Image (cartoon, rainbow, N blue to C red; front, side, top):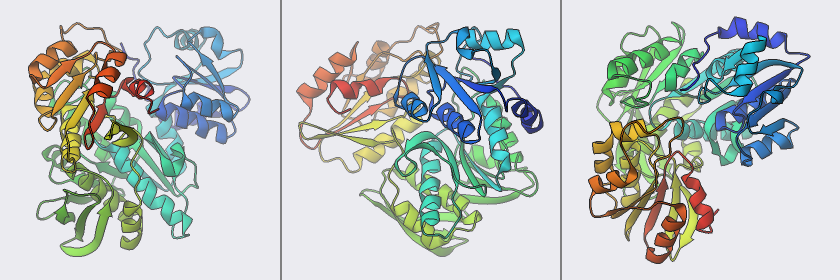
Length: 473
């Protein structure tokens, strides 16, 4: 079972951190994308910082390169004798030995979301990107726009904390000044309700995280609470083509800006040419031409992300020309249709998609520019999600010519659902094959790949290990 979020808030965490000035701050799960960024920000703020994770990675290596001590494996002794506070990710179990020791000895434990909410409060504009899909990509688009402005002296340098690495940041975070703080607002276990956005972006909302959210009413209520966090003086930016985000934004008293493809949106995309790279479209603002965009990305979902990034940037005073320049330079977030290389003339991409909506959107985008076969390798993520959406998963691969399924990545769960990738392959039909190891998948791809094929490797677990076996890491 996951560990719950704390809800201490800014004042209490401020008091905790003041007591840590001569002590260390310890991060459990320090190798995670967001956790590693928070550890780095904490060290930059002058605190002694340490952490632990299950195994070495590129992210833990980066922490160590800055002088942060990282322990591999979880052991209560890792906290040492001078630990003043523990920051943890809710993905850890309640029997984590470091967490248990901190609880036993009265060392304050702060959940990742609560701590991020504290960190951002010293910034003037706090742009929180929320949604079931597209958060990391939209955050990266905002990063490109603001960083390119800062380089030209048009805006101050932003601080950014994302859920994915991005080339222009050299990682998943960028430390800037105290004007703009751009962050990914994760909804899992209502984590985003501990944040303090002044600009709340609502990309989309649908059924997801079924191990926590029990209904769409639960989800819409959570998104409505998140939108309300901006108060009367903030701004809510929402997708007017998504009925759930419209519902979430309905009763907020803040300023509201809508985006989408339909009539009446404040920021609206028209003349969309999606079956080529880069995507071309015009953005209207209040029905007048705002800017023409050339976006080096695939799929209609990318247009929505770009519209949201445009609205957020404009709200902070970025010009239309600078927004267009930033979007045209967008490089794609890591593991979001990230090009990895070729096998026998087939282009291979890595993608984090693990929900049916994400899979379908990504594959439709890939199919639009594919002149050969579209092959998808998919590792389902968690038994609960796979069981809940089994029928939708079967439909999500409609655009693929061939589907290869790896074993389900369990994450924090046990299989009490009777679901398996082998059963999912049977649901998808003859074009789907189940393979019981990454070695077997690699052999199949090497034998089968042909010139002009596109191979998309998808999943939120450890499917990225396949690239080493393909010689593409």
